[in-house]
Amino acid sequence: MTEIITQLSNYIETLDWAYIFTFILISYGLNSEYATGLFYKIFRFKIATRYRVLIIGVLYGVILYFIRDYTIYDIETFIQSFAFALVFHKLLVQKVVRYFFQIKPIKPTQYEQ
Image 1: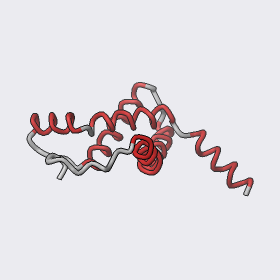
Image 2: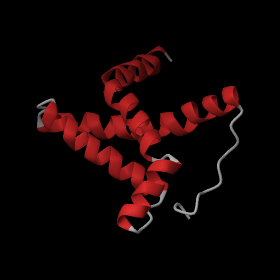
Image 3: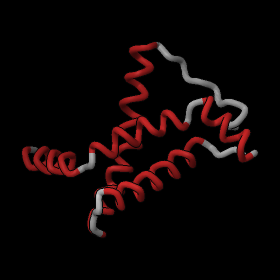
Image 4: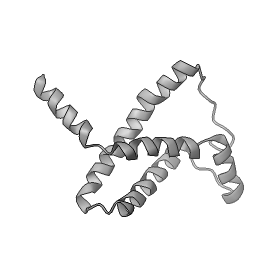
């Protein structure tokens, strides 16, 4: 059991937490009703939320890759951080925010259907 906890803590320490938290914040902002409505007004097509999040995560990862001057070996860290951010966001952050603020799940807007 100690070995499992050690391996898990080593895995969590290697994740890019700055990327994870900023990715979640950026995704929340760009998936707001205002941003999706503005996107629809400009480009006249809809993208499902899951695809917007995927595009945001990949583009943000590529931008950070070049800004931080990472090596090719750091791509694995970005992919792991991206996957962890999706799970962390869906399982923990969203549930905690809804619990504390009693926010009911929002029905998809006309732009997300």
